[in-house]
Image (cartoon, rainbow, N blue to C red):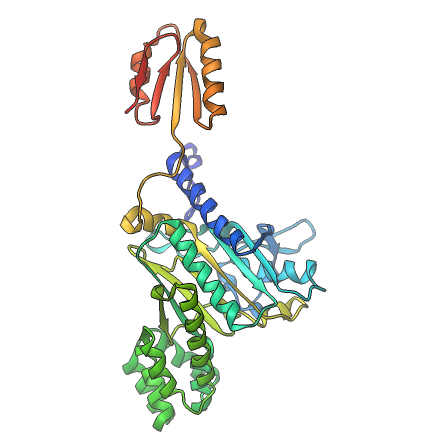
Length: 402
């Protein structure tokens, strides 16, 4: 039992010392970018009512929620996803606001997944939501900010992959496919199973241009030329509007100067069913999962009583740190300030306190440690060489920790 008390629950972990400092430094850099785009801060509770994330909202499946009961018998959940929480808060506090609302946030999400391959159940996320702006300019601005955040994080090799859920929806509508058949076909297309999709369409009796367009979806991945191909396939369908939206977004991203970090994936979908337009994910070297993910969700706020267009995204801090550690960073140096340790005996307390005050006032992180009567100052200094840039022995010679 005692050994169990030393461990965290499955999918949770402790973060401390240098890793914690790198995490905090990264969060500060990302927060600075969001604030520079005019976003104000919001904090929502870690616990929400179950209905905020209910099935009709289109978020995490209920089986993956951490659920509790309060004293009144209400079902509560640990927040698995920030977007519904922000939508709830905006609907409450900005109910009469007619101008766009820009909010950014940071905190932990909790998803009771299977923890395969060490996947964590608790993750720190930082993100932003732009509420009340349904324009293509808002789409492009959010993607540009996502690129800027990854650059500011120190990543050098990454891509933002952009799709539009209305593209596949438009092709399915043109082919007359809906319900469970549509869901089954989408699963095949998302998994790049062109052969299986072809067989599925054959069974449904779909032929001609509608079938050719759907069979081509798994291959619609790449740069700007993908939009040309998608445009031809979508001609005469509602899917053409989705392609036009993506093309206009690209033209704006070129103005931001970030288009080199952008690719397109017309077969992209999301497990979050509240997305209604563009969706995007950021991928980088050495990490298999998306480090940034988001999209447009124009119907979600209506669920909470304030119909409004919206777009947002989150960055997954732990995955970005993993990418930086695995060689995807422009710099690998720690962002933590230099630290100094001052060692002192009983007779040198006054000198040590004066020195540590001077260092702290000048912006240096300085710690103090009193020496026991039987401790050797040089030996203690040697044990701390890996923890501090410099060790100073008050009343004696200066010991460098280099």
